[in-house]
Length: 84
Image 1 (cartoon, rainbow, N blue to C red):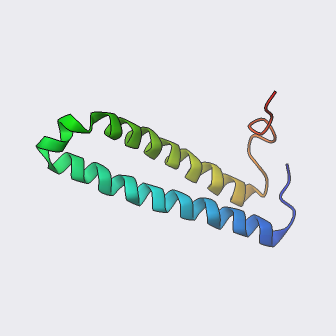
Image 2 (cartoon, helix red, strand yellow):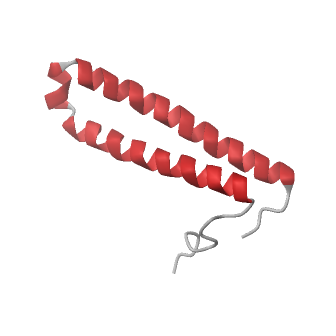
């Protein structure tokens, strides 16, 4: 899938980058709060696990968006978009 329009491609790249930065910042604050409080570590183990998984996905999102922006196309084509 080619992203032919310059404005659309730029907006897509900026949106992906902004989403990844905001989410990474938010999850980093959450993990820092959990790390600093012994009481929260035992109570919030499930949320901490979800935050770590989301943080990993944000890194993937950032890399995918950066690759799409740089190459001008989706690296995997329509493979991820097909739901059958």
